Length: 445
Image (cartoon, rainbow, N blue to C red; front, side):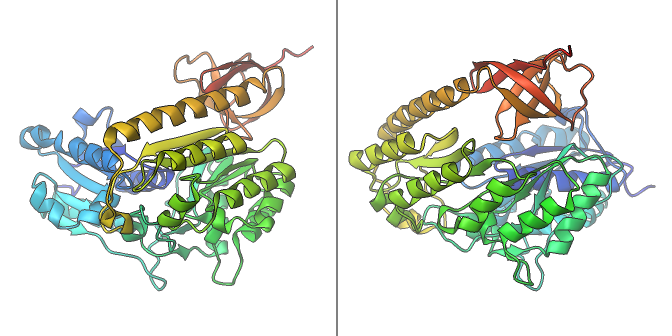
């Protein structure tokens, strides 16, 4: 009997950040390399992988709930269920005791071992726990598996882990210490992606600003190398830590033709005292100055951010300070959340003294302000021409094309029936619609 006769199809459900999305794509490529194919639906899959996020309590609970949905399928069809990602790394073998329906627990650094784990599950071994942790001698970057065709836009890990230990953040405990990939390895992967159809890459890291090649090459230098390589049309990156945003990086964004004018810069709070307790390493004024530098060097840049409300000890005045910074910077978009304690973090030992009702009220006020500022930034683009990277048809209407501007704004547009995904087209913006833009490609005269 073939080793893979029973496990023929897979389904991956992803929670969390772009790093998790990237991990899921890597796992999918590894499974396809075993001769497996994506299932048409999760109900039909022989193997289900739930790739989890533990940065906040809500996505952690969602991931565990998702994994539990397949217990009936396990009994009826012997479906295998793997919990992967940060929750898996955080819980380890204890998760098997808490959730005995799990066939395997797989940490982010163990993704390269997935083929072996699938073989073992096929042979009815398990449950299996693999939560190895990378170090400088064994960074555990999963090599790109060759594909005949890749997506027109790809995620490329340049570094992983974090040394900052922000007091609220579990990432250093589940993703480990900072480790960077060699420049040549990154350039080789981008070249391979380009040969298989990729035209845009997003460089990933918990803090890309901390990237340092073993030879000493820093992140701005890497951007210059990739831009000079010329394999792809567009280069994006995320995430940047404010305390490490250098003048050299700002200059690279301003000067390099292929680097897009978008920086995701996590504020987290606009209060000096809260930022200090968060161990963020900068003040509100420092942050505002960085935003001014970015906009001075790149007038059309889009600055996006993350903000937490209700951090322990956050007063009404602290929250007003956050609103003030939001107004001063005028973020183009933001992800905002209520604080929730995370195990192993310094903030978990603080008194979570902001009532849930107040957290919810503050979040609503903040999101209303952010939505108003975002709407104003989108309206300012009405009537202008924007270069759009076509990602494919619109999710709502296959007759409409969709893509992103250099500043990462979503545009849906008409009159582009002959345009292919991965190509660049100039689109006239007609109007702002919610969080997106609507436009059309001018008819040739």
